[in-house]
Amino acid sequence: MDHATLATLRDRHPAWRLLASPHAPLVASFLHQVFVVPNVRVMSEADLAEALEDELFALREQIGTDAYSLTRTSSSKHLAHGAGQPLPRTSPSKPSRNAWRKR
Image (cartoon, rainbow, N blue to C red; front, side, top):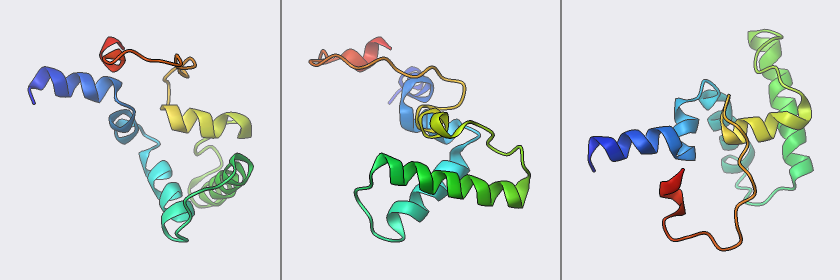
């Protein structure tokens, strides 16, 4: 891989954006606690949102009330798509083979 490819991936690939996000510790620890530790592979959105709210409440008690301050409905979407990044539009039903390169 060359430098330009890696730089583009860093800027546009969701996993790279997550790792570079200031929310990375929250997301990684939350996903580990909710899915890996109890060996859960499927969870409803409502249960996931509730677990996230519980985790945020606990973190705010530990590190301050303004930590990760978002509304409940926007928290999971915001964290899933990266802080400060616009939420993606719905993807087309048949994306082109190289659609990821156009971003």
